[in-house]
Length: 365
Figure 1: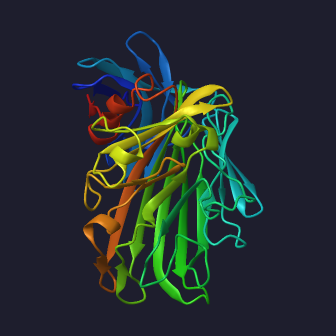
Figure 2 (figure 1 turned 180 degrees about the vertical axis):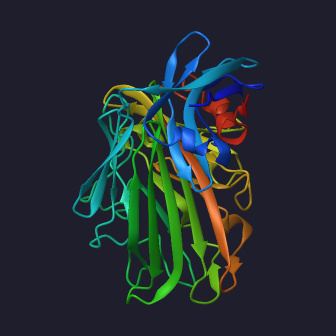
């Protein structure tokens, strides 16, 4: 096999378990698609690498930890044993997600619920980070992590009161891997009677991170497949929604802070920020959830619909007005969720945002 070498440059920022990838050309493709591989640095330290066929190319994905300004060379090598990275366990109407053979969360698409959700989400100490309680009366529709919009052509896909909208799962596919795992899904958003309103294609990427946190990248594309689609100026929107665990919320002693240093609902709600973090104690472990907005999203940086009682959602529609898609048009929203140990400072929430929007540079040498 022809030797493949990469050089990774950290740039201006420290990197910790930072996801990166590069495409290998068609000429190299036949050399790297079979077997299990790793990347060996100059000192002989080997890290997992995940290979994904991309037609005429193959992508190499891995996680790097580097100091600012550091460059490191890696050589692609074959290995005997595969790493237990991200695995999926199919069950009835749900998929359990495991990282390093440990339960992380479940993707639930049971038709008894109005919309799919992720939950419960567990931290690295097996502590709950989100609320998933089907017996509560306070905002009972807020199931852990979900996608929803409170006004799509006048239909409420956020709350679940009276003639609410529903999301029907039509296709799902899982791809496990040593570095990351992907759930691809297709949904039709319908009115209460089942009439189609719009389509959603979603990709959830779960990373196997060996240290003190877990990343989830979300990419959802909404398409006006059935006529003009209007996202109304509703407060009840995300499209991403999260309900943090009860003991983490500000009302129970937790902390919310945004990228500008604003603290609490009074300073963060309705304000623009590139990210927000919500942290507190869960099972006596200091833990948190940060949400990173993507530069390509509409209205970047987003406004935030974030509450002391535990709701956590980026929201542009209420503050910037409605968004109209003509028939056939689509819009994509991307976010990274960082489920972390520690508080905002110790988890390096600010620094790790650059891993998302300003990743290291990679070259084949």
